[in-house]
Image (cartoon, rainbow, N blue to C red; front, top):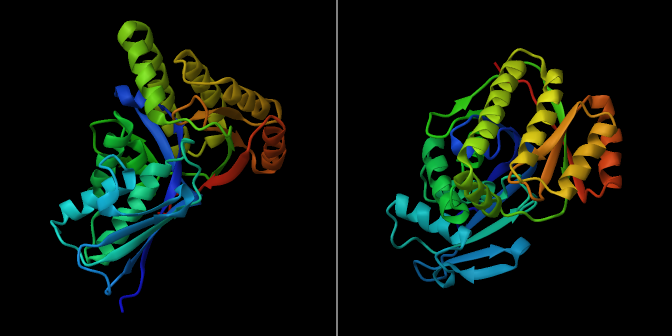
Length: 318
């Protein structure tokens, strides 16, 4: 009997440029290996050909593929991969999905799950898909699920590298000269990205001049941040994070819970802090000196964070 095939994918955080990236400005994102999605594919030789069963205990899903609606994101990932490989009648299998990435929290849960599923299934069928193909397939799922996603989640998660991303341009991974520590604080408020993206689009349509200026400012911050990271000055990113958060507040994508956690981090010694991802809930991030991390973690919990994650953006291997 065939052994089970597994694949994993990390979470991600956006350091700079969320929302503005949808409008053509640069954004910077990094993988977060402390959380991950995992897909496991098991052959089911006793079941009829074409029988595909999906188990996702985290979201109480236990169903056959044929019974899942078109808009189900797991079904989209499976059907997208089968279509790409031109497999109409796959050998029977069970797909089991699990994830330690909080849902709707700006950590790339959806893209990570799709990445793990597509990689595991491709390996199950004996196909080694290059990263660009995987990324394109994951992006198709993201588009159908989120409406107008930037493309940053699938890019940073599939390539598992720090990414400087400009929509419509080739992916740029870039060098981290000096490692730096980020504390992530989760508000516990679920925040589907599509809602914040759609609301901001309506505001932009009503007052394009004002919002284009905000997007320009966020893009300039992302460009400065990349220079600092590449030149080994990550400690200088703090004021840029604070300013980026102020811009996101003006875009109406922050929330009282996020603002409270950002303020708590700043007051407890963080070098800078901001929301990360779609906003309206989800996560914020704080840049900290390694020795300050626990102090900031404690302050975030006291201010209402339901969970914190400490991650290190590692120096890029030569």
